[in-house]
Length: 116
Image (cartoon, rainbow, N blue to C red; front, side, top):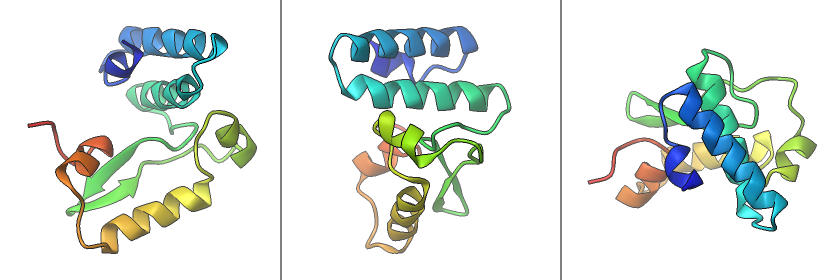
C-alpha cells in the first residue's frame, strides 16, 4: 500500500505513505527505508521545498535530471535509508542520459513517462 501512496499528489496522502513506510521498516521490511525516503522527498517537493534524500527525478528537453536536493543531508543519512550517495546518483543520471536508451519500465521508475 505504501508503494501506491508514495505516488500521491497531496500532503495528506504522502504523510500516510511516510507513516506506513516507517512502520514497515520498524517491523523488519528493509525496503521500507527507501520508501520512507522517497515519500519524504515527494512531500518536500509538493510543499515547494528541495528534496531531502535525492530520490526524485524529472525531465528536461528529453533528458533525466535529479530534482533539487537539500545541501544539509549527508550521504550517511542517505545510506541509512537505502539511498545512494549524491555523487553516485548523479553518475547514474549521467549514464542514463548518454546510454543506449531506457526501457519503458525504467522511464516509469524515474518519472520520465507514465505507465501504459
